[in-house]
Length: 266
Image (cartoon, rainbow, N blue to C red; front, top):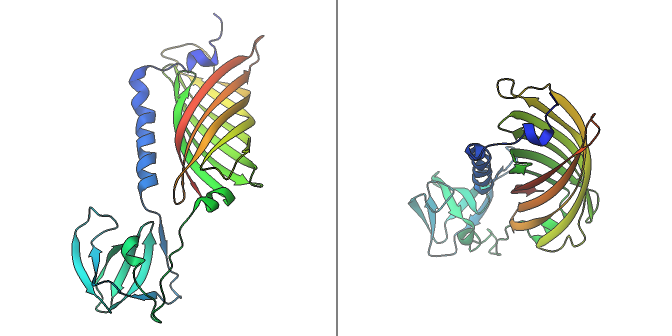
């Protein structure tokens, strides 16, 4: 009996689609979950004064949380921490709650000057040094979930390290690779890119379904995709890669991959 190919043993049924769909859903929810930054313990908390008739405090960082307290004009609040568009503040009476950035931008510094709140912009997206994300999709008919981290050498070139889990109907597997990415127009909000990389793939057939031994093969790939600046520090990424699996048999194998997901840059 001939040894099954990589694409055969990784072929998956549609019943397993929920696996990567669930992972993608978790990713989206994680991307939408605000990123928390707190002031160091030994630094004084920043104080601002309410300039509007009132400042609404919510029980949590989101409009879905109810308003439970109102701060009057002229009163000061301390900024404890930030979660994307929301700030946790404390009043002079010790009441703590969350205020959205739109209202915080209307407050004043103790000296009466306008308050400025830094936020990630398209320029930060263009000049970011680090990026990490998670993508999910289809690898030759199998479900695949991938994590990656990248470092930008300059605005046009970056290096990425990938790790993937492959979930098939006849086997499971993992893949690791190192990629070089080229972006011709890194300052575009929708930035196309080309990628070239190499690595290894390991497949483990399910012995109760298909005969065969565990295999570890070298791989190479070329690909293309889009990085789309979403908001603040989040990027939506979609890509296609064409793999060549260098097997020990007479012929190598070709596998196509489609993935999409979110990333965080900084």
